[in-house]
Image (tube, rainbow, N blue to C red; front, side, top):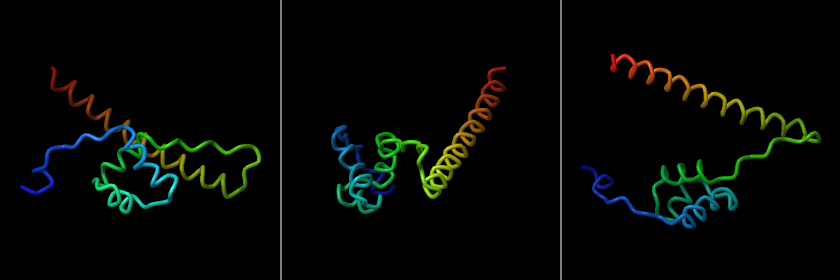
Length: 101
């Protein structure tokens, strides 16, 4: 058994999680450096970031070409993730429907 799986899960306050995410969002830390700084697992910090980080605002009418390209790239990535999740759910639904018969 690894040492990581031996530990009891620790509970963190919502404020601690938000402060940890702010290191990445507002202070420019990498996920690895921020996780080390607050002594948590990087995957926990990434999960908190997904839940707590502010969503990017859409570009306005006066956006530069670079801003539009960045938004387009972000939206394509979100769409790809949503399509992947949808496919997984379709397969799971078909599997469980078949199992219940």
